[in-house]
Length: 263
Image 1: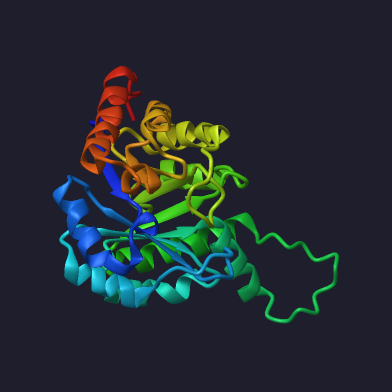
Image 2 (image 1 turned 120 degrees about the vertical axis):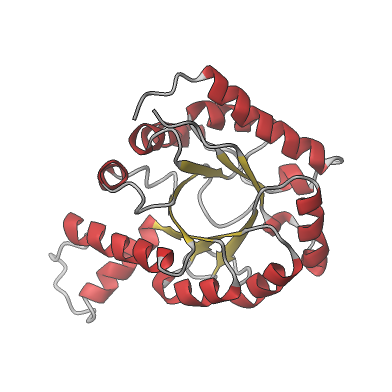
């Protein structure tokens, strides 16, 4: 059976001092962060408008940390190449946004009768998402797929993880609804974390993002998360380095306790 992957801690720069992003990135590297989590939001898919490829490019020049780009965008496919060009190490697209994009592409006119089924065919949907994952991987970038707590983890995603290992480089199970930092941890999302871990195997990258602190990190890690995004818990701490160490040990301790099923 596969060995569990070592913990990855990805401080979210959405919680950093935006007037000193380069210095903040360098500081996170010096404190033991593994990645930097970059929330790319367009003000449409989510109400917040944050940052895009120019800032990713500047960060890439300023820090050795891999930039983990979490896209909350209405037109996710359009941003794969610009983010890869800017130096993204990982690009995570939302399941929900890809599904909506496919639906718009397959019904270009808005004159469809009200009886028309708004959901794309599941097979067509899976194929569409697979092509986007491959487009990211083709750029030498880790391809991720994200789901919001309100969506849950779709069966077709679990099936893809079981049947096509390597297609999806990381799954992000959001532990708050996407859009704004500082929200409360959604405990019900942990059921999705458990399902993804069972489907993807011990060595897969499974990320949680939203309301992660020392306490919730333990719960998420026990459910199977090994990539933790933390915003205010790190950037708002007196001793961020200590928090990063504690988040890492939460994952290591959980992996030692959890009986890993043979994949």
